[in-house]
Image 1: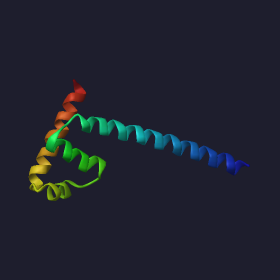
Image 2: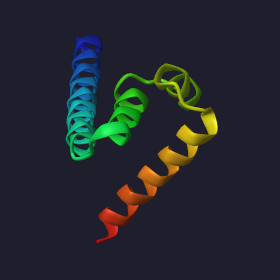
Image 3: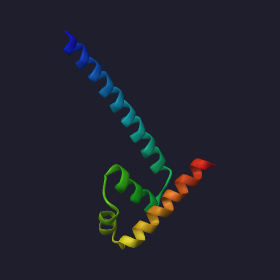
Image 4: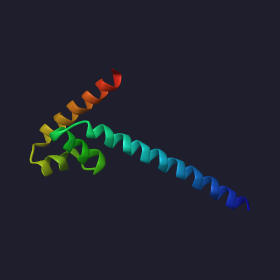
Length: 84
């Protein structure tokens, strides 16, 4: 009986964590949708599809350094808008 209670508690905790992660994912997608063009594509590939910046550069036909700099610029914009 004690083990069942323990398992139930673990399952409830996991359900809450899954719910939180799903909410965070939805917030990320909403944020990404505020961008357009190349910026949006970079964010989707990185944070939705899980690609590395190097893979994104290959897929989009840009140099790694360009995508790395573009990503850094996008992240600065996001941080700036969060402060405002």
